[in-house]
Picture 1: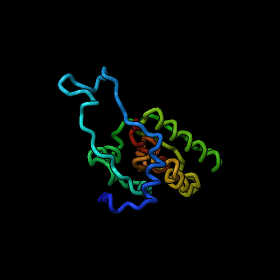
Picture 2 (picture 1 turned 90 degrees about the horizontal axis):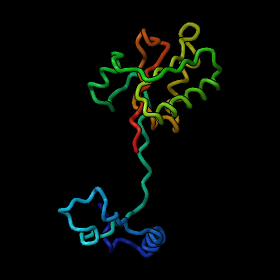
Picture 3 (picture 1 turned 60 degrees about the vertical axis):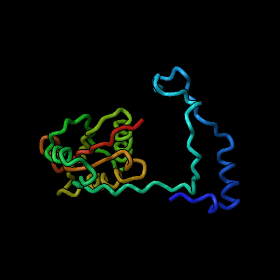
Picture 4 (picture 1 turned 45 degrees about the vertical axis):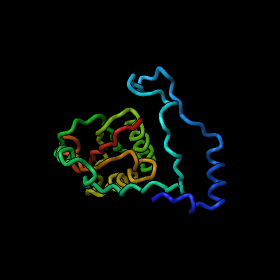
Length: 177
């Protein structure tokens, strides 16, 4: 609930004026494609009263990625992801890399893939000796890092044809803007 004018103290009012001192109203051009002929010009439209903004609230942290967790997804898409029915857009093989190089390669790969609008990528980590590969164990932690987590929607184990237990499907969020 927004605070009423009476709830605002002088410090808040000074802060608000300081923040908004260089702000001007957005005035689209008359030939804007967004205006229709039925609507009055922007200057004739009544303007809502300016909202009073309390404090900036930091965004909620995203839930940690867990391999196989798809609750944040559309059910049909989650089922297709788990069955390996979604088309793979790119693949990264981390075999033979040191942990540092694998981490850097994964980070760069995920950023580039998201920036170019790719949706599903396969990251081949390998299983390691006796199924205890270090890259395989670290990859989920790297994907949960603050710089990558906002880009990733879900992670599941890949199907046998895409690398099986030594690979991960990484579904990236849609690029906004």
